[in-house]
Image 1 (cartoon, rainbow, N blue to C red):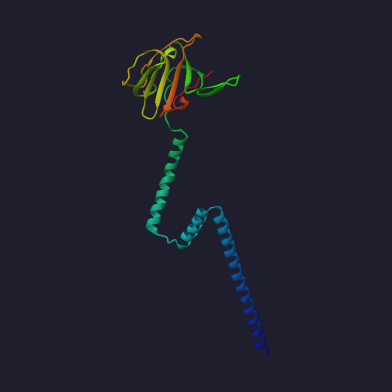
Image 2 (tube, one colour):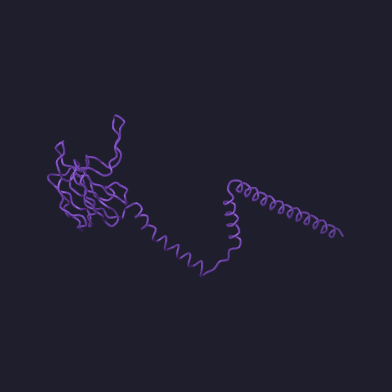
Length: 226
């Protein structure tokens, strides 16, 4: 008899604990749902598109069914992209891009870009100005076609050569060895340089991508500067 009472009492305790745990689970779930609703409402206030994306991600994750054929192809494609990533990275940083010989041996007197003087004035150099060693003459850094020859008066002739990926400009020339429309090879002499008022000869050299000037040192190996 005592044993029956004990068993009944034990069952009552177990039932009480089960009900308590059940209610606690329901309460926890309700709290989680409430938190999710609050987060969604906050996201809705910030950006409705974000909310829709979050809901879509949750929906897709819940209802996603794994497909061996489809997902296997996706994983294989992703693996191939990972293998080609180093090559693309090298291309972005110009680590595997070939550099070309300088248009003339010498030193860079005036670099590419903006120069600000002590009086506050500034000038922008669209290329680099090179003082050549001895009586060197400028050469084409790459195969190309002579696009134009322009006479700029006191600044001399400016020759533009069109290459595959970019164009080059050779300025401050007093005589020309090439003609417009002529296809020339790397190393072809472009012309001769005149002497400036300060007694030096200068080559003004530009590299253009489209119509925009870029720093020639990105394309040529040139180690000496003033």
